[in-house]
Image 1 (cartoon, rainbow, N blue to C red):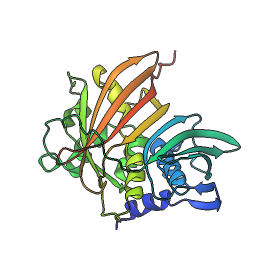
Image 2 (tube, rainbow, N blue to C red; image 1 turned 135 degrees about the vertical axis):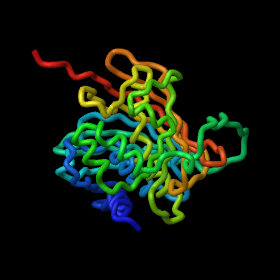
Image 3 (tube, helix red, strand yellow; image 1 turned 90 degrees about the vertical axis):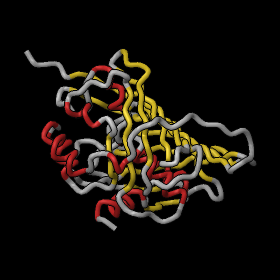
Image 4 (cartoon, helix red, strand yellow; image 1 turned 180 degrees about the vertical axis):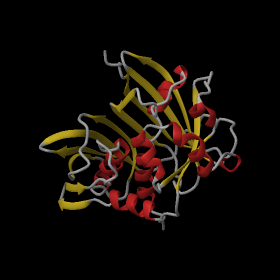
Length: 288
């Protein structure tokens, strides 16, 4: 297993401090604030460690304060409900005595019922797209220094954008974006782990979709993005170490905020998860 994937698994392997209390750490990669997907994934791990025999089917979260990568994050789990069909947990992430993130997570067992799903978009498969070496050669020089430094490191998540040209200045007239994603090594068969890794992954590219109609990206130095909230629904079983198509769109941007949606499909077209997020997409104003 690669060092980057092992680091991600270590980040998600929280230390239990007490019955409902856990501690997580952050990678020391020079970022000024904790990556939002890390906090989502760690909070989901904390919730799952207080529930047996049920998998999470949804979470609804708010980012309240920027996370400090230099100090641990304490996750406090509230056991809100243990019902016959559903289990509910509330998780607060705490640093420096303040809540920086809060989420509600719902758990449910499988039931028989009505079944339908939207169709997967028709796009090239991951094997038909440029690999990471080509992406790095053409896109990395255009990124701000902190972002480029991150992408120059070995990373646990492999990404292959379908609309690769938008990072080279090409406008996507339909306002949609598709990216194939997977973790870079095989994982154990634990379905909880796959859902927690997907929670981490779900925040990587979503807010960027709010800039597609404007021909911009979050990688540009004058764009100041920040996730405000995050909602995630799990629909069907999946493996995050196999390719998933992450289809994005953005119905609205106004008031300095952008709203983006995402749908995740397996290669054979099964819709396995849905995501929604609103975030700040401020533009840095020039001095003088």
